[in-house]
Image (cartoon, rainbow, N blue to C red; front, top):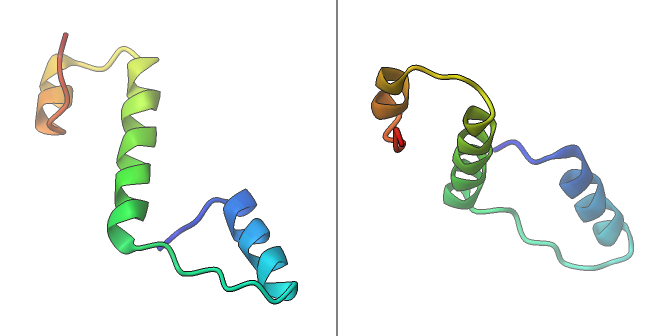
Length: 59
C-alpha cells in the first residue's frame, strides 16, 4: 500500500525513536485514495457518465 511521503516519513521517525507504529490497513489506504480522487474530480469538469461509472454523484 502506498502512503503519503509525510505519513511515511513521520512513521519512520517515530519508529527511530522506538515507538510502535502499526501498518495502515489496506482498506484504509484504499478509502483514502478514493476520497482524494473524489475531491480532485470535484474541481474538474468531468462528464456525468464518468462520475456514474466511478459510483460518484453527478449533481
